[in-house]
Amino acid sequence: MVAPSACARKLLSFFPFLLVLFDLQYEGVVSGINADVDKHLEMGKKLLAAGQLADALSHFHSAIDGDPDNYLAYYRRATAYLAMGKSKAAIPDLSRVIELKPDFTSARLQRGQLLLKQGKLDEAEEDFKKVLKSNPSDQEEKEATLQLAKSDEIQRMRLQGIAAYDKEDYTTAESLLSIVLETCVWDGESRELRAECYINQGEPGKAISDLKAACKLKSDNTAAFYKVSRIYYNLGDHEMSLSEIRECLKLDPDHKECFAHYKQVKKLNKQIQTAEELIQEGRYEEAISKYGAVLKTEPNIPSYAALVEERLCHCYSKNQQPTEAIKECTEFLQKDPNNVNALKDRAEAYIQEEMYEEAVRDYETAQQNSDNDKQIREGLEKAQRLLKQSQKKDYYKILGVKRNAKKQEIIKAYRKLAQQWHPDNFQNEEEKKRAEKKFIDIASAKEVLTDPEKRSRFDAGEDPLDPESQQGGGSHFHRGWNQWQGFNPFGSGGPFNFKFNFN
Image 1 (cartoon, rainbow, N blue to C red):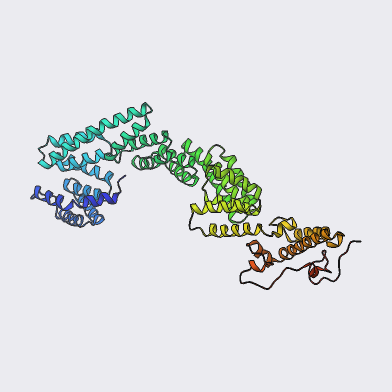
Image 2: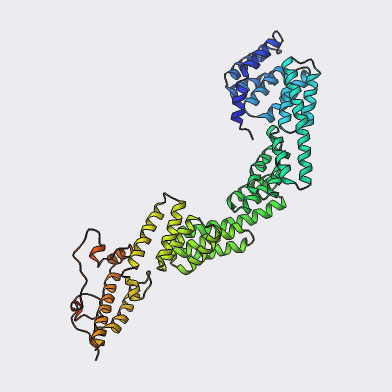
């Protein structure tokens, strides 16, 4: 639909010419029954020429109040309405001008053009024919002839478009109706029919603009609001769907289809909003449950099934449930392979499962689709460090614990392994040497993973016991077996006062 501001600019460019032409043609005509009306008309004309439309309109209102039979006041008010983009308001004024002065061809020609834009072709043609029969000027005759020919052509195309639609040839119908709407920009019925063509061609998103225009062009158009709401709903935009169905109920609170759909979309919208609030609060278990309820409310529309998969992927990843996260994320990414959020969430789940190569791959794919995402950049760097680290020494694997293991779990695993691999348990020299190496690794793992600062550094990809991996260097060194002589693997730290032996 043409923007009102564009119409206003175009009309304003013709104001000086129109007003001068009018004044020359009707010079000397008695315009009103008193001086006040003449004053308002004169002031309104000046303001109109200056582009001060609201002020001009106010003066024309006053002129009409002062003389309800003054055709010139109605004509100039119609011109102001047109400049403001209020074509609907202009038509009654132009009709009143024609009623008061039937031979006023300029008013009839303008009304015909507006009727043509509204798609009222029969009425428009009648105006153009009457212009040609009423001794028009050369310019008016030329314009009326041109518009009459255009109206005949549009009439033919519209009938062909309707026939094509009836035959379910939606592509041809849409093409013909698009040509019609280039001229009949305010034709609500043609817009609704073209919207149906889009829907039947599997492109409901294109139908929205036509249906929204039809809502404005046709009073009490509950059917159009309902269709727009259904389209948004089926596309997964529950918030816009709720907004549009409310407009339908404003027009008719008892509308059965609108009310039934309103209850459905309101319930779904509330569930999704609540789930998102739970995620913001870090209450992932409850959010998972709430998104399960979303699927029960709307099990048939793929958009919502995909939304649930994507959000469950996120919740499981954040809730340190990597197995479930990887499953949900993978199912979702099969439908939307380049979804950045799902790729990030699955990458985090892969890290939790110590699948670093897969995590790097997901972050790299995400980065290709979102160059400036700081979270992706940092995640990729972390995954690359952990991958490199995993190819060396992994203290979690040494103790056989998960990366999210609690301190007590770490100590328990350490004690069990320390008892198993204490060198005093072995008599054979080769076995004792192997046990000494294993025992040192176990002790080192316990030292790093029970110290929050060291563990944090290790989780970030740095080995706090490896001088080469520490930024800025350091003098720390790995203890040999001799340094571990005399410590108690069942102690909690600090100086070790006795040697552990098995008899």
